[in-house]
Image (cartoon, rainbow, N blue to C red; front, side):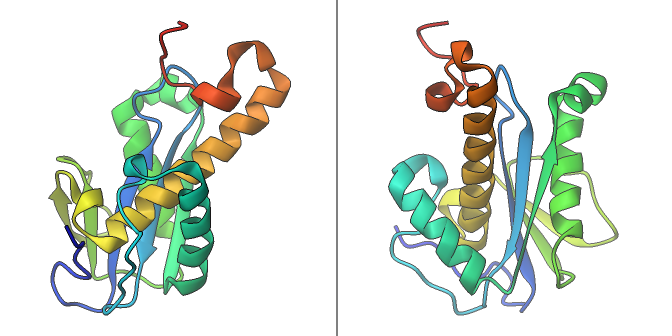
Length: 172
């Protein structure tokens, strides 16, 4: 299935997605990406459907081709204080704040979002497999979080974060 370039046809749509909500350890990371209206890429899709090598190549391309992109990171201490859902909203809001262009619409992967700065939003379940901008945000959030977990693995190698990235595995 080919992803769609736009939800509304408006110029400044920002896709938003997160990584790390279902983890046992590490931060929650969100990304917001505004792509050109006519953007198309054959490989770009939900980050969970791609191999690591492809995600890393797409990360570079997204950062170069996007009109704007931003990443928000909320660490485990804040997650423990406000809960994972609220921490996800904070990460998403941080990502939007880092965009160089104020979006006219936020396309949020999932079924919930806390409204932000009076910017209209649409929640789209499975949006990372439907819209290029959300897929791009999915890739930036996933790759950023993976890189953070690999750095943490260097400090705490006994947890195996270089391979499990903080997600539950059969080894646990």
